[in-house]
Image (cartoon, rainbow, N blue to C red; front, side, top):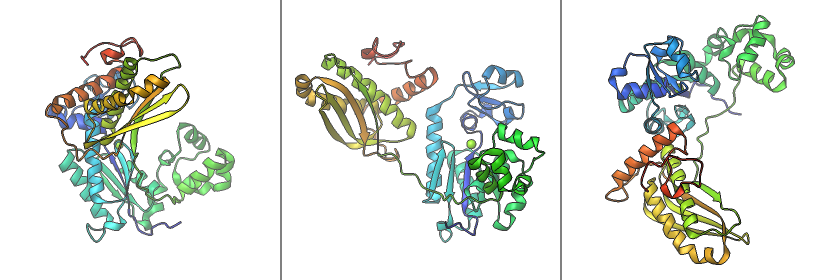
Length: 396
Ligand SMILES: [Mg+2]
């Protein structure tokens, strides 16, 4: 396996991401302890973390640690948009981006030296661009291996940049506490502490055989390799999904076209919401049907423009259902599915209809209500009494 002799891997990680978006969008929150979450802390600003607030703690407990905290409801649509904006900065800087989560990615920047400069310069530029274009603080670690780049960003947080040159790797790594090693949770840490082992350097000195006996073969070998900064993993840009879909079994009892239509509306709601959360738009709407005799049929329609609008996708899916209705009448239906393919990344988004701005606003509002109260909180009037108990809130 080829491992670079130069530090070209960046680990970029937004700082207190959800809380930072809230502080960006409401200047009154700047410099103050902010907690994002309704029941459980999803994110805490550094001001709140300094007072002992931690992610996944109950909001009630967090308030006791930090009585002055401002608690805000999560706004997933805003975070999803911010994440997309940040990934756009990543992808403008390097073609080799491997996303780890909504707020964290590896970049290999070895190929952009001539165009942009050496890795430390790219890392500084990345931080400046994210700050200027998205308004958020981000920390970057730079190293020769993925593992070490991630350790470096962890050490540099918040709003920091840390470059580990190849000749300084072990000098940097070995004084750190064992908890910094990937895969060392509280249980493993306690086992190591019981042996008087506190630092990564002490783990490396133990030797592989001892670690394997202590932690098992896989964990022991991995820990030994990491303590020596052996990590052959390369940055792999992930292939994004080609379509997003959902389906629903209808049972073998005869089903009317109205019932199929109602199920279809629920499926489209789900698919369109997932597309918007992922920041994707698509052009091809596919209807899938399965019949009593186990035969199948698919019908598809390609729109002239990409969309993630519930209304536009539902209109297309409904017209496909009408086209397939003679088949349904003849064979009886047991499953309906809908998917949207031909996906883009949402950047080339065009309004589908003159009144699409209103439906977009409605989509966004529904997305937030579902996020807060669960997907059964809002449902179409036609679905009432079919799904789980639901609150009728909105006209179809
Ligand atoms: Mg983060």
